[in-house]
Length: 273
Image (tube, rainbow, N blue to C red):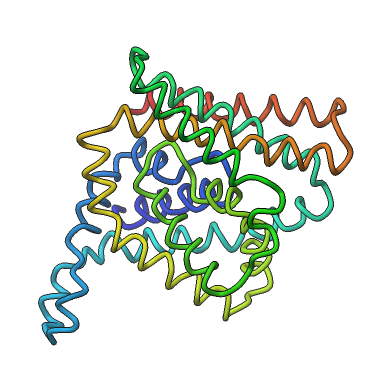
Protein backbone atom coordinates (compact mmCIF):
# COMPACT_ATOMS: atom_id res chain seq x y z
CA UNK A 1 0.00 0.00 0.00
CA UNK A 2 2.83 2.41 0.84
CA UNK A 3 4.47 1.69 -2.53
CA UNK A 4 1.17 2.33 -4.33
CA UNK A 5 0.65 5.63 -2.51
CA UNK A 6 4.18 6.75 -3.40
CA UNK A 7 3.51 5.79 -7.03
CA UNK A 8 0.31 7.88 -6.99
CA UNK A 9 2.25 10.82 -5.57
CA UNK A 10 4.70 10.36 -8.45
CA UNK A 11 1.82 10.46 -10.92
CA UNK A 12 0.62 13.75 -9.46
CA UNK A 13 4.13 15.20 -9.49
CA UNK A 14 4.65 14.12 -13.10
CA UNK A 15 1.34 15.66 -14.16
CA UNK A 16 2.29 18.89 -12.41
CA UNK A 17 5.76 19.03 -13.93
CA UNK A 18 4.31 18.51 -17.43
CA UNK A 19 2.39 21.78 -17.17
CA UNK A 20 4.07 25.20 -16.68
CA UNK A 21 2.81 26.94 -13.56
CA UNK A 22 2.14 23.91 -11.36
CA UNK A 23 5.05 22.75 -9.22
CA UNK A 24 6.01 19.13 -8.72
CA UNK A 25 7.83 20.31 -5.60
CA UNK A 26 4.59 21.78 -4.29
CA UNK A 27 2.76 18.50 -4.94
CA UNK A 28 5.50 16.65 -3.04
CA UNK A 29 5.16 19.10 -0.16
CA UNK A 30 1.37 19.06 0.15
CA UNK A 31 1.14 15.27 -0.19
CA UNK A 32 3.57 14.83 2.70
CA UNK A 33 6.59 13.37 0.89
CA UNK A 34 8.73 16.48 0.40
CA UNK A 35 11.02 16.18 3.43
CA UNK A 36 11.65 12.47 2.87
CA UNK A 37 12.49 13.19 -0.77
CA UNK A 38 14.92 15.98 0.06
CA UNK A 39 16.59 13.85 2.74
CA UNK A 40 16.88 10.89 0.36
CA UNK A 41 18.43 13.05 -2.37
CA UNK A 42 20.88 14.67 0.04
CA UNK A 43 22.16 11.20 1.06
CA UNK A 44 23.20 10.32 -2.50
CA UNK A 45 26.99 10.49 -2.75
CA UNK A 46 28.31 9.91 -6.26
CA UNK A 47 31.87 10.14 -4.89
CA UNK A 48 31.38 6.68 -3.38
CA UNK A 49 31.11 5.22 -6.89
CA UNK A 50 34.47 6.70 -7.90
CA UNK A 51 36.00 5.23 -4.73
CA UNK A 52 34.62 1.79 -5.58
CA UNK A 53 32.35 1.72 -2.51
CA UNK A 54 29.35 0.39 -4.43
CA UNK A 55 27.70 -1.35 -1.48
CA UNK A 56 27.79 1.80 0.66
CA UNK A 57 26.42 3.84 -2.25
CA UNK A 58 23.60 1.35 -2.70
CA UNK A 59 22.68 1.25 1.00
CA UNK A 60 22.37 5.06 1.03
CA UNK A 61 19.66 4.94 -1.65
CA UNK A 62 16.03 5.07 -0.53
CA UNK A 63 14.90 2.69 -3.28
CA UNK A 64 11.50 2.18 -1.66
CA UNK A 65 10.94 5.86 -2.42
CA UNK A 66 12.86 6.40 -5.65
CA UNK A 67 11.54 3.42 -7.64
CA UNK A 68 7.76 3.91 -7.25
CA UNK A 69 8.04 7.72 -7.25
CA UNK A 70 10.20 7.73 -10.39
CA UNK A 71 7.87 5.23 -12.08
CA UNK A 72 4.85 7.44 -11.34
CA UNK A 73 6.59 10.58 -12.61
CA UNK A 74 7.73 8.78 -15.78
CA UNK A 75 4.28 7.39 -16.60
CA UNK A 76 2.66 10.79 -16.08
CA UNK A 77 5.26 12.66 -18.16
CA UNK A 78 4.99 10.29 -21.12
CA UNK A 79 1.17 10.32 -20.97
CA UNK A 80 0.80 14.07 -20.60
CA UNK A 81 3.48 14.84 -23.18
CA UNK A 82 1.18 13.50 -25.90
CA UNK A 83 -1.68 15.68 -24.71
CA UNK A 84 0.51 18.78 -24.41
CA UNK A 85 2.13 18.15 -27.80
CA UNK A 86 -1.32 18.03 -29.42
CA UNK A 87 -2.56 21.16 -27.64
CA UNK A 88 0.57 23.20 -28.37
CA UNK A 89 0.35 22.24 -32.05
CA UNK A 90 -3.40 22.57 -32.60
CA UNK A 91 -4.69 24.88 -29.84
CA UNK A 92 -1.74 27.15 -28.96
CA UNK A 93 -3.68 30.28 -27.95
CA UNK A 94 -5.97 28.62 -25.39
CA UNK A 95 -3.11 26.42 -24.16
CA UNK A 96 -0.89 29.42 -23.42
CA UNK A 97 -3.87 31.21 -21.88
CA UNK A 98 -4.21 28.26 -19.52
CA UNK A 99 -0.48 28.50 -18.74
CA UNK A 100 -0.91 32.23 -18.06
CA UNK A 101 -3.61 31.53 -15.47
CA UNK A 102 -1.57 28.79 -13.80
CA UNK A 103 1.59 30.89 -13.56
CA UNK A 104 -0.22 34.00 -12.33
CA UNK A 105 -2.07 32.06 -9.62
CA UNK A 106 1.14 30.32 -8.51
CA UNK A 107 2.80 33.74 -8.19
CA UNK A 108 -0.13 35.00 -6.08
CA UNK A 109 0.21 31.99 -3.75
CA UNK A 110 3.94 32.68 -3.36
CA UNK A 111 3.16 36.30 -2.50
CA UNK A 112 0.80 35.06 0.22
CA UNK A 113 3.61 32.83 1.57
CA UNK A 114 6.14 35.67 1.76
CA UNK A 115 4.57 37.35 4.78
CA UNK A 116 4.80 41.10 5.26
CA UNK A 117 6.55 42.92 2.42
CA UNK A 118 9.71 44.90 3.05
CA UNK A 119 12.31 46.61 0.88
CA UNK A 120 14.59 43.56 0.69
CA UNK A 121 11.78 41.29 -0.54
CA UNK A 122 10.64 43.85 -3.08
CA UNK A 123 14.20 44.22 -4.43
CA UNK A 124 14.57 40.44 -4.79
CA UNK A 125 11.22 40.30 -6.60
CA UNK A 126 12.29 43.10 -8.96
CA UNK A 127 15.56 41.31 -9.76
CA UNK A 128 13.63 38.10 -10.50
CA UNK A 129 11.18 39.99 -12.70
CA UNK A 130 13.91 41.68 -14.74
CA UNK A 131 15.83 38.43 -15.25
CA UNK A 132 12.72 36.55 -16.38
CA UNK A 133 11.50 39.36 -18.62
CA UNK A 134 14.85 39.59 -20.39
CA UNK A 135 15.23 35.82 -20.72
CA UNK A 136 11.70 35.43 -22.06
CA UNK A 137 12.45 37.47 -25.17
CA UNK A 138 11.24 35.42 -28.18
CA UNK A 139 14.78 35.38 -29.63
CA UNK A 140 16.76 34.59 -26.48
CA UNK A 141 16.61 30.79 -26.38
CA UNK A 142 13.94 29.73 -28.85
CA UNK A 143 16.35 28.60 -31.58
CA UNK A 144 19.00 27.12 -29.27
CA UNK A 145 18.31 23.39 -29.10
CA UNK A 146 21.92 22.24 -29.00
CA UNK A 147 22.71 19.25 -26.82
CA UNK A 148 24.86 21.25 -24.34
CA UNK A 149 21.99 23.68 -23.82
CA UNK A 150 19.50 20.79 -23.44
CA UNK A 151 21.81 19.41 -20.73
CA UNK A 152 21.86 22.80 -18.99
CA UNK A 153 18.08 23.16 -19.29
CA UNK A 154 17.61 19.76 -17.63
CA UNK A 155 19.95 20.71 -14.78
CA UNK A 156 18.06 23.95 -14.17
CA UNK A 157 14.55 22.53 -14.57
CA UNK A 158 15.05 19.66 -12.11
CA UNK A 159 15.79 22.15 -9.34
CA UNK A 160 12.07 22.95 -9.34
CA UNK A 161 11.46 19.55 -7.74
CA UNK A 162 12.94 20.86 -4.51
CA UNK A 163 11.51 24.37 -4.81
CA UNK A 164 7.82 24.43 -3.86
CA UNK A 165 6.05 27.08 -5.89
CA UNK A 166 7.89 26.89 -9.22
CA UNK A 167 7.63 24.12 -11.82
CA UNK A 168 10.25 22.47 -13.97
CA UNK A 169 8.04 22.96 -17.02
CA UNK A 170 7.86 26.67 -16.21
CA UNK A 171 11.67 26.91 -16.22
CA UNK A 172 11.79 25.03 -19.53
CA UNK A 173 9.24 27.48 -20.91
CA UNK A 174 11.39 30.37 -19.72
CA UNK A 175 14.45 28.83 -21.41
CA UNK A 176 12.53 28.28 -24.66
CA UNK A 177 12.85 24.47 -24.42
CA UNK A 178 9.40 23.41 -23.21
CA UNK A 179 7.74 22.49 -26.52
CA UNK A 180 10.97 20.95 -27.83
CA UNK A 181 11.28 18.60 -24.82
CA UNK A 182 7.55 17.75 -24.90
CA UNK A 183 7.92 16.76 -28.56
CA UNK A 184 11.06 14.75 -27.76
CA UNK A 185 9.16 12.80 -25.09
CA UNK A 186 6.21 12.28 -27.42
CA UNK A 187 8.45 11.08 -30.27
CA UNK A 188 10.72 9.15 -27.87
CA UNK A 189 13.84 10.94 -29.15
CA UNK A 190 16.43 8.93 -27.22
CA UNK A 191 19.39 11.20 -27.90
CA UNK A 192 17.64 14.32 -26.62
CA UNK A 193 16.03 12.49 -23.69
CA UNK A 194 19.35 10.91 -22.65
CA UNK A 195 21.14 14.29 -22.62
CA UNK A 196 18.21 15.95 -20.84
CA UNK A 197 18.06 13.10 -18.30
CA UNK A 198 21.79 13.36 -17.62
CA UNK A 199 21.32 17.09 -17.07
CA UNK A 200 18.51 16.54 -14.57
CA UNK A 201 20.58 13.97 -12.67
CA UNK A 202 23.58 16.30 -12.55
CA UNK A 203 21.43 19.24 -11.51
CA UNK A 204 19.66 17.57 -8.63
CA UNK A 205 22.86 16.07 -7.25
CA UNK A 206 24.85 19.28 -7.62
CA UNK A 207 22.30 21.80 -6.38
CA UNK A 208 19.94 19.94 -4.02
CA UNK A 209 21.93 20.71 -0.86
CA UNK A 210 22.46 24.35 -1.84
CA UNK A 211 18.78 24.91 -2.65
CA UNK A 212 17.70 23.09 0.50
CA UNK A 213 20.02 25.37 2.51
CA UNK A 214 18.61 28.49 0.83
CA UNK A 215 15.03 27.36 1.44
CA UNK A 216 15.76 26.78 5.14
CA UNK A 217 17.65 30.01 5.80
CA UNK A 218 16.35 32.48 3.17
CA UNK A 219 12.89 31.13 2.45
CA UNK A 220 10.98 34.41 2.13
CA UNK A 221 13.67 36.01 -0.03
CA UNK A 222 13.67 32.93 -2.27
CA UNK A 223 9.90 33.20 -2.57
CA UNK A 224 10.22 36.91 -3.42
CA UNK A 225 12.76 36.15 -6.16
CA UNK A 226 10.65 33.29 -7.53
CA UNK A 227 7.56 35.51 -7.53
CA UNK A 228 9.36 38.11 -9.62
CA UNK A 229 10.65 35.35 -11.90
CA UNK A 230 7.13 34.04 -12.52
CA UNK A 231 5.58 37.46 -13.08
CA UNK A 232 8.34 38.45 -15.51
CA UNK A 233 7.92 35.21 -17.46
CA UNK A 234 4.26 36.02 -18.18
CA UNK A 235 5.71 37.78 -21.21
CA UNK A 236 5.98 34.33 -22.85
CA UNK A 237 2.30 33.27 -22.81
CA UNK A 238 1.16 36.83 -23.62
CA UNK A 239 3.45 36.89 -26.69
CA UNK A 240 2.29 33.43 -27.79
CA UNK A 241 -1.39 34.35 -27.39
CA UNK A 242 -0.94 37.49 -29.50
CA UNK A 243 0.98 35.56 -32.18
CA UNK A 244 -1.59 32.75 -32.43
CA UNK A 245 -4.88 34.59 -32.60
CA UNK A 246 -5.13 37.13 -29.81
CA UNK A 247 -7.71 37.39 -27.05
CA UNK A 248 -11.20 35.94 -27.40
CA UNK A 249 -13.80 34.31 -25.17
CA UNK A 250 -12.20 30.80 -25.13
CA UNK A 251 -8.78 32.33 -24.36
CA UNK A 252 -10.20 34.34 -21.45
CA UNK A 253 -12.11 31.34 -20.09
CA UNK A 254 -9.05 29.05 -20.20
CA UNK A 255 -6.96 31.71 -18.48
CA UNK A 256 -9.54 31.99 -15.69
CA UNK A 257 -9.78 28.19 -15.44
CA UNK A 258 -6.01 27.87 -15.04
CA UNK A 259 -6.01 30.57 -12.38
CA UNK A 260 -8.83 28.97 -10.38
CA UNK A 261 -7.43 25.45 -10.70
CA UNK A 262 -4.29 26.33 -8.74
CA UNK A 263 -6.33 27.78 -5.86
CA UNK A 264 -8.69 24.78 -5.84
CA UNK A 265 -5.69 22.44 -5.57
CA UNK A 266 -4.15 24.56 -2.82
CA UNK A 267 -7.37 24.54 -0.78
CA UNK A 268 -7.93 20.81 -1.29
CA UNK A 269 -4.46 19.73 -0.19
CA UNK A 270 -4.25 22.25 2.66
CA UNK A 271 -7.43 20.74 4.09
CA UNK A 272 -5.97 17.23 3.67
CA UNK A 273 -2.85 18.29 5.57
